[in-house]
Length: 75
Image 1 (tube, helix red, strand yellow):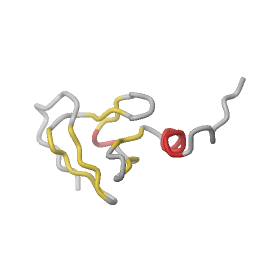
Image 2 (tube, rainbow, N blue to C red):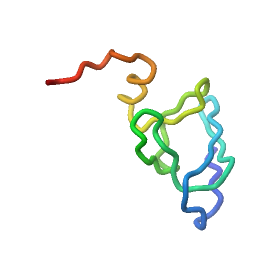
Image 3 (cartoon, rainbow, N blue to C red):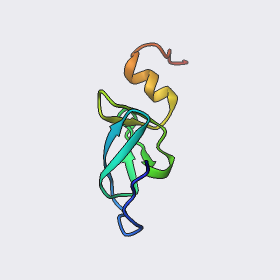
Image 4 (cartoon, rainbow, N blue to C red):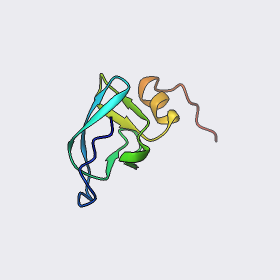
């Protein structure tokens, strides 16, 4: 359920993350990734944690948050 409140809300949205869905509490055009701090446009939001109530920009960010150390740094 994408509940975006019109085009005039250009800042960061406040979102409640639900199972398989999310609800926009305060309108905005993006949320921030809890791991990378990257802006995630609301219409591109795909990954989040219901338990932690936070969003992730990529599947790698999800793994990094939930399994720290699982992704080895190349170097």
